[in-house]
Amino acid sequence: RDNIAKTAIVTGASRGIGAAIARRLARDGMQLVVNYASGKAAADALVASILADGGAAIAVKANVADAGDVQALFAAAEAAFGGVDVLVNNAGIMPPALPALADTDDATFDSLFAINVKGSFHTMRQAAARLRHGGSVVNFSSSVMGLALPGYSIYGASKAAIETMTTIFAKELRGKNITVNAVAPGPTATALFLNGKTEATIERMSQMAPLARLGTPEDIAAAVAFLAGPDGRWIN
Image (tube, rainbow, N blue to C red; front, side):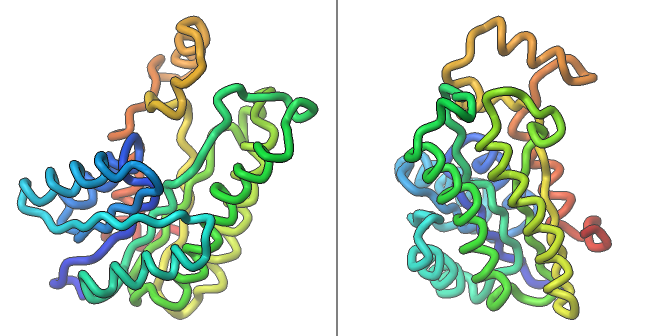
C-alpha cells in the first residue's frame, strides 16, 4: 500500500488542533475525511483549502457520541476513498468553568464522557473492523493526567480512560499491523483552551512548559503526523 494514498479520518477537525492535523496529513499526501459535529462552514472551508493545495478531502458531519453516526462516518470515507488507514480521535470537550469535582453537575459529567470517552470507543470499534493493514490510530490524552490540576478531575478521568483503552487496543489488534498511540498535549493555544481563562492564567500556564510558551495546533499536528506516518511504524 506504500504507493497508494492513505486515507485519514480526523474527528472534530473543523477547527483548532483537529484542523491543523487535517492540513498536515493532507500535506503529507493523505486523503482527508474532515469530521465535524456543528462547524459545517469551518469544515467546508478547510476542505476547500486542502483541495486548493492539490489535496483530496471531504467533510462529513457526525456526532462521535452516536454509534450510528460513527458507522456512517466510516461508510462515507470508504465510499469516497475506497477505505480507511488512519483514525485520529481528536474530538473532545472541556468545560470552560473547570468546576471542582464537588461542583460538577450530571450533565457536564455525562457530556464529557459521551464525547471524550464513548466517542473514541465508537470510532475505535469501527476501526478494529475497517482499518486496513498497516494503518494507525492516534488518540488524545492530556498533560493534565500528569499535572493533576484542580478543576480537571472529570476531564482528566475521561483522558485516563483513553490511555487505558489505547494500550489495550494496541494489543488487541495484534496481527493486523496497526499501531495505536495517544498524544497528550500540554496547554495549547486553541479556542477550547483559551475560553474562560484570564490573561494571568494563560501567562502562568505558558511559563510551565520548558520552552516558556503555549503549544500551537501545528506542534501537536507534527506529533500526530509522525505517529500516523512511516516513521512511527514501530511505536505502540
